[in-house]
Structures are given as C-alpha cells and as structure tokens.
Amino acid sequence: MKVNNKQYRTVWMEGQSIFMIEQNLLPFEFRIFEAKNYAEACMAIKTMIVRGAGAIGATAGYALAQAALEAKSENYHVYIKKAKQDIENTRPTARNLFTATERVYKAALISPQEAVKEAQCIADEDAETSRTIGKYGNELIKSGYGIETHCNAGWLAFVDHGTALSPIYQAHKAGKDIFVYVDETRPRNQGAKLTAWELKNENIPHTIIPDNAGAHLMAQGKINIIITGADRIAANGDTANKIGTLEKAIAANYFGIPFYIAAPRATFDMNCPTGKEIIIEERSQDEVLYQIGMNQNNKAEKVLVSAPGSSAINPAFDVTPAELIAGIITEKGIIKPTSEEIKKIF
Ligand code: MRU
Image (cartoon, rainbow, N blue to C red):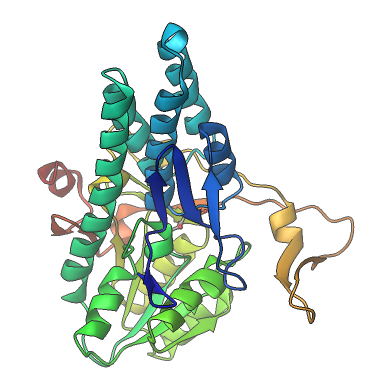
C-alpha cells in the first residue's frame, strides 16, 4: 500500500531489526517503529504497536528469526525455545502468530539463516494470500452495494492488502460503485481509527458508524453484505474475530444479509475442534474506561470516558458460530464453513 506516494508493507525485516508501522499513533501520526531484538518485538505485539492477525503473525516469525540471530552457539537451543514461548505468550487468540512461530522454529533448528528465510517466506505469503482473497471476494460485490465491516482487517492488519478490505479495494479498482460502513469497534476503535484511515487513503467512499448502529442500517436496507476478518477459525468453521462481530452476524442473519469471513489458511486451527476451545484474550479495563484522541494542541491525550470508580471487562474477541457465516473467503476460493469444505483446502 502507498502512504504519501511511498510503497509500504505493515511490517518488514532489515538486517537484525524488524520495522513496523506504529499503529497506536494512527490516524494522527505516521511513524515507523524499529524493534532491535526479539524482546522489543514481543513488546510491540503486546502493546499493539503492531496488530491484526496477519501482521502479528509476520512479526512473530521475524521475532523468532531475530532470536535465532541473537543466540550464542553454546545455548542456541535453549535461547530459541525460550524465545518461542515468550513470543507465543504475547497474545493468545490470533492463530497466525502460532502458525508463524511453529514454522520458523523448525527452520531455526537448521540454522539462523534458514529461520530468517522462513520468516520472510511467511511475510511474502501473507501479502500474496491477501491479494488472492481480494480477487475471490470481489466476485461477491456488486456495483451499488453498501458493505459493512468490523474492526480492521485491512493492510495494516496484514503485511499488505488485508483480508476483509482486500475485496473492497479490488471492487473499487474495478470501478464498482460501493460504499463502506465502518463499525467504530470499541474499545480500541480499530474501525474509526485504522479502517477509516486506510479507506480515506484509497479514496473509497465510506462513513464511520457507532458500533450499535449496524442493525438499524440493516433494517433500513443500506447494507447488502458484511465482510469481516478472523483471528482463529476452528476446524468446524466457528470463527473468532474482534469483539462485536457476533452481534453483527446475528443481526445480518435476522435480516437475510450475507455475512462473510475473509481469512487465509494460516488463520485456521485444525487442532481446535470448535469455537468453544478458542482462548479469548482479556485486555486491560483501561481500554474501555479511557479513550485516546488528539487534543487541540495536536497532542495525543488519554481521557476518562466512564463513571469514576466503575470497573469494566474487556474481552477482545468473540466467536461467531459457523451456521451464521455464509462463506469464508480464502486464498483457495470461497468455501462453506463446514468441516468437510475446510478439510478440502488443507
Ligand atoms: O486486537 P487486534 O486489533 O489485533 O484484532 C485483530 C483484528 O484485527 C480483528 O479481529 C480482525 O478483524 C481480524 S484479524 C485481521
């Protein structure tokens, strides 16, 4: 994707450093963060400097490659094993992170150079599968469509192109007249901050809607299709995605609106039989109680937006049962969310 006419990936590796777009500063400031070692990369994933299933997967792969480069030969195996655990302890839900650490660990057992090669391969695959998902997803979009999306499954959430937004980019490129309704996605506002920023950057007509406005717009006939990303898809098609996705799927089914998930095979967890076994990350209550915005002096500011003294719960994801999903857009085509169809793409 281009920002200020320059081509960027969301995350990349140069020498022993990982570079990533600092997503906590967007949309107010565009800055690149450098993680000089795997510990800094872990911190970047945990604090969501880098976020989104594909982008944290790529970062996790690079981080383990970094660890392999850092390790001394006398304790190489102990060091990379500990690094794998540390990286996997950063965020529990997105399957892509574990897909990446498992692949890079195997390569690191051969040599640090093989680890770097494998990490690069994961990042390249992520960009390519996202592009292909866009091609398949575009077939679902007709000119005149209102499309609702939740959270950010755009290029910022992957290495490039994105998943849920990739079909939208291709539809727009093909000259289709589309309009995107962007759920703000409380509490961290990935929709209002990141998806809206991406769509504006690509000149795609859109508007931000409050999280609780989706059903109302569906009732008014403004939404023709919903496309969201996924963080982990169980073997039976149950899908974990950003908190609030389940409500959209229920409302869409009530109104007969097709609800699609867009995700690469790296997001599927074939060892997880159903959505019930997916671990849902719990994040700090501060993300609910406070909001971060830009003040009049162009400085980022954190303000309390809730009753002082009240507590909050903050589950970061929910699980949409397979029966509410019209189809999953993958790099192997659009499949029904059933165990049989899922098995076929592996
Ligand atoms: O907590 P985040 O921002 O890392 O959440 C992950 C997501 O971006 C979403 O759930 C997304 O819709 C699927 S992953 C691209």
